[in-house]
Length: 108
Image (cartoon, rainbow, N blue to C red; front, side, top):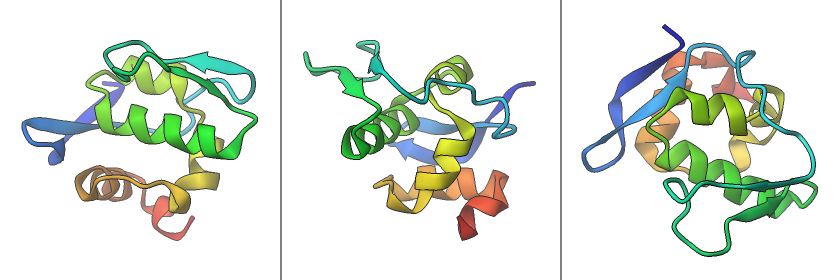
């Protein structure tokens, strides 16, 4: 099984989805990424991964809104996630879910 749902909530009624390993997260590391509407309801859904603020905003949205492991694999890069983890503004449930599964994120 490639991911787990967590007892922690990303938001009311939605369990956080967590990848089983960070190495399975092979999303893009550069360029422009456009999120699907299910992850970002705004008409401005394109993010330039070369802009650190836009990268953080995209990761926050994906980690908070996804209900699918494929979104994590396609949009998040494991090494980048580890690098920016402390800078992400995430709901408490999302942070706890990921840090429970990936203890090394606690010290990232």
